[in-house]
Image (cartoon, rainbow, N blue to C red; front, side, top):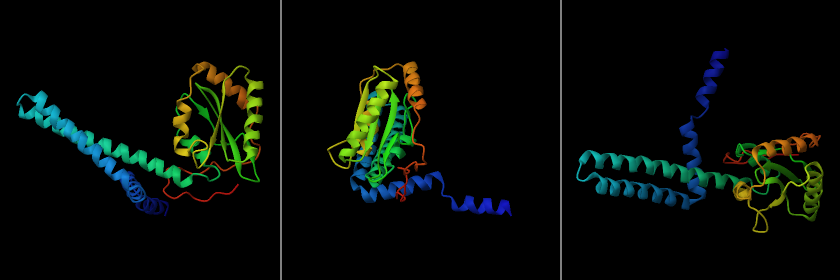
Length: 237
């Protein structure tokens, strides 16, 4: 019986390629420009392969063929990368503005040199606004999810806590919004990684450990929404 249930689950679960194809189809539907960009990248890679094969081949058919194949495979890879990034951007836009969206990003897309948690360090239950914390080479980054005046006060409160626990550490404040008044969700990590470095790897661990010792939220908070899902499920605090 158990084997039968496992077999049925395996048959129902879509394969990796099928999942990618579904994501690409949704991306192409919601973002038609992505198709043209992917096609352009594909054609440019093939053109580069043909050109290099002609210039470097010196009339050798085998060399020309190898460069052509290389350009074709590179074109497929480039097209897939373009579609993947546009799909990621589209997924972020789908959950943008929802409670827990920042936590979802921090839970799945963090570089090894950074430490973060999908759990907020401060939250306003009334407006579902929250502050998240990242620690990395640029110091401490406090990320606010929300746009009210209360969020600004929450950021200031958390900044003071950080400075008491780790004096001298650079503290950055970012606000994630759905317009140009702050940082858009799909540009959040790109913005963080561009910040000027001020800590070495060993110092990052020391600062992160000190801040973790302060404790976080004492109540269960949903981790957020999976940004790679096409449709964002509704979550409640």
